[in-house]
Image (cartoon, rainbow over all chains, first blue to last red; front, top):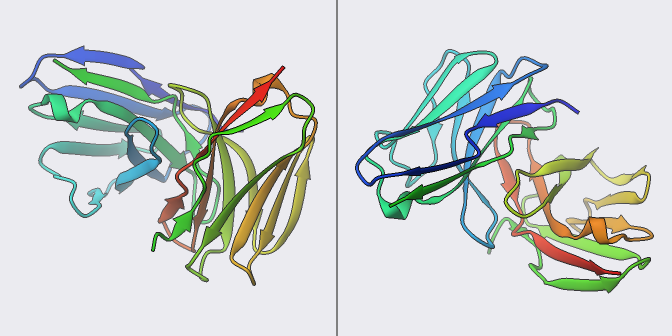
Length: 115
Length: 110
């Protein structure tokens, strides 16, 4: 299957700082990328959908000014958690697909801990 | 009512057993159905991808979709300890939205 690389896999930051997470499709062009958040023992919760070259579409309840998403190229999307707080600590996962109605492939996930 | 219902388990079986994992859903518009396997602290890995009703087999894994009952299943034959993981069902319509089940935690004991 296609490969999606997510970096970093783990990050610890101080409260009030910003953290950037990268998601790259290594062997296909990702026209659409998705960002999810997963709490322990819970399912994936979609945060936002981004199409290359367009503004991201955020799910209800997700603060777009706090979770900045950029999808500037067909192989790279970034999620920046701004002014992070301990309640932002979670597992963040991206996924990507190369067109409509195709399966999505996931990155390895990033465990964010805000102290 | 959630759009996708999946028993979170945990489910524990002995090695070699046949495992049956299931999801029900309420949105009859769902057309694409997926099963993901997620090991602890890792991203989900796509196992099976099916369109509409029917069966699909890949090695020890068989996915079944019954759209009339809004019910999907994943069967694992000859289960192995390495199959121990959380299994997530997912489905979507002809757009960006993908809905996930809660995930079933499976343990295969040697």
